[in-house]
Image (cartoon, rainbow, N blue to C red; front, side, top):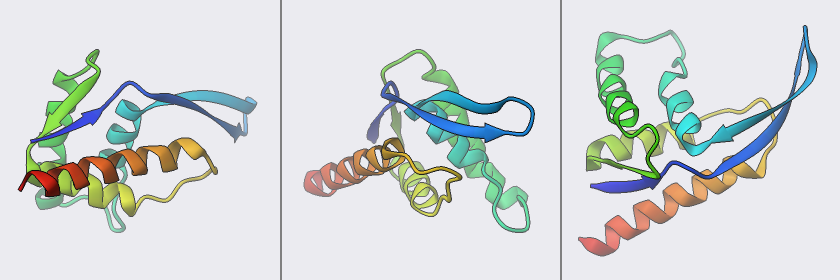
Length: 112
């Protein structure tokens, strides 16, 4: 099991057509959800969708908590997907979450 923090929050500023410049709070919980819901090139097959839905269910059950624990394989999928994500704005918060996932992965390696 891998324990991931959910509560750190940072802000990003985006430009929208209707509202102009908008500042938005983003939590690690939000980043996990967005990572899993981000469509791969060509869309979702059921084979791709199934493990993501399983992880989203675990995430949903952890709503309001400070951390969430993922099975090893689910964490590895989340970790890979996040490392491959593309972002529309530059933010230290995105890098900080990646650093957190790196630390979670290292702790797991030490425990083996």
